[in-house]
Every structure is written in C-alpha cells, then in structure tokens.
Length: 223
Image (cartoon, rainbow, N blue to C red; front, side, top):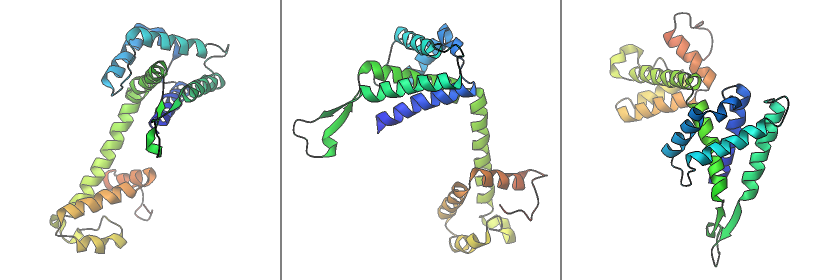
C-alpha cells in the first residue's frame, strides 16, 4: 500500500503539475532546480535518498523523455511519459516472503534502491514546485482561514455569552442536541468541529460569505 501511494503521488501529481503549467521542463536542467529537489528530499522522511548528482541524472532522463515528442510538452506526450514511470515503478517491485509464510503479514514488497530514488525525485519535484508554489500555498492559506473563522464564529455562538441568540447560527435540527450538551465545552467544541467538517466546499464558502461578507447572498438561500 505504501509503495502504491508513492507511485500515485509521484507520477499523477507530476502529470497534473506539468499539464497545469506549474512545472516547466526547461527548468529541470537548471542547477537551482536540482538543488531545491535535493534539499526537499533531504528534509523528507525518505530512507533511500539520492545524492545531488543522482538527482541531476534522474531529472535529465525525465527531460529527455518529455522532449521525445516534437510537440512537447503536449498532454499526450506527458501522459505517455507518466505511463512509462508507472509501469517502471510497478514492475520493478517484487514480493519478498518470510522463510515460512503463514499470513499476509509474512510478505513484503521489495523495491530496488534506484527505483525508490527515482520516485523520491518525482515526489520532491511535485512537493517543492507545485505544493509549495505560492499559487498553491496562498489558496491553502485561504482555505485554512475560512475553516478557522467558521469554527471560531460557530464556537462563540455555542457559548453562554451569545445570550438569546445562542445556537441560532446552526440548523434548527442541531439546536436541541447542542442545548443538551450546553454545559460541556469540550463536547460543544467537538460538535462544532464535526459540523464544519460535514460541510462541502461549496457549503463552507456559502456559509462564510453569509457570516463575513456584506454582500453574501440572500437570507432565503439555503446553505
């Protein structure tokens, strides 16, 4: 399962990053790019870590594969390259068993070090230049702030200080439940957390607009 997750993260996020334009293959040969990828790997909890020269060689091969098409980096070319890596990573793995296997826990997946290093490089590319790109981090920050402000506003509405408006920010079918645990601050906080977690992205954004934006829609619109 761990290796399956590694393969999915390394390859599919690479594909998404290339197609979305976060990753520009011409940058892969630059020293700063290889050095940033190498630093990212060294910070990660990776057992098999390539050195800087190995990172450069893996990036070089990736670039060459992406340049194999005259129309590079077209979506079709990118997908073909990603298929190559999926096939390589999957077929390189082999099953290793204990001397006298009796349960599924007596088996393990064995992956050659060179293949693990390739996977580590692809993952580090995605983490360093997609996930940590300011276009991604600013959206992540906004999402975190939306959730934080929703939780704080709703939590305050469960406190005694809300007076006669206590629990009124919640759907009517939740109010009796909240009233029943009104003296248990920990349980109230958990209920608020569960309520916020139950919202879809669209519902959370809609509720945020209603609570904090002056033009946040009509009171007759359902959340």
